[in-house]
Image 1 (cartoon, rainbow, N blue to C red):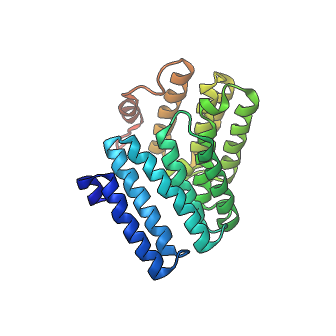
Image 2 (cartoon, rainbow, N blue to C red):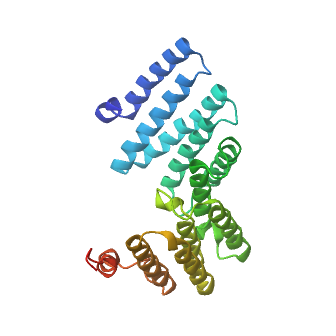
Image 3 (cartoon, rainbow, N blue to C red):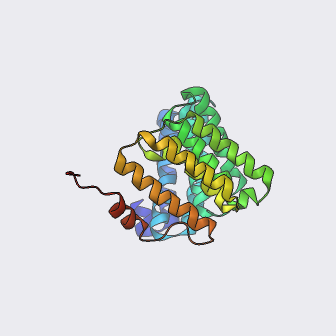
Length: 255
């Protein structure tokens, strides 16, 4: 990475290829070491690209992250969680290049990663749930649903599956069932379906009933603002909503 930054991409790639050849000679072409090197270089390029907004480096990172998938398959077999992780990293980079309309290859990678984790780790494992949420969020984008009822309900089905498997309270919070319902509500709001959006918000607040009072109050205030703002055609949430909610929800210890 230091060579890429100081001498350019071509010099960095040449140095990496020498290191990769040495790893193949020492550990074997189908070794974990080779797969890890490909991932490290791909992620390194992606991190530099993210800090500099260099789309060429992002595109180059995808090449190495894709090669890492095949390398992990060779090292572990097709059904190993390390393959799922490689697929996830590849999808991350693809989505970062086109957030509004990611390529089908990103969705395909996330689908396979989810199937692997579901079989290997189980339906309620944190990684499985996070993967399912990621896939549901991808399919909730306007570029995927296109306002078509069948596509909207297909995305909703993923969220409902996520909600059914998620705990009411979780760390991090985004894996919780209430957070899943809010994500579903936002998709409905995005598609101008106010009845469905508000019903999911109501259920989310209900499911958050076991949360500590302040946490539940903040969640209710902020998410209600986000959804109502979207339904009104405004940006999702007012900039000062966090401060307003904090003031509204705070109760001194002696009260």
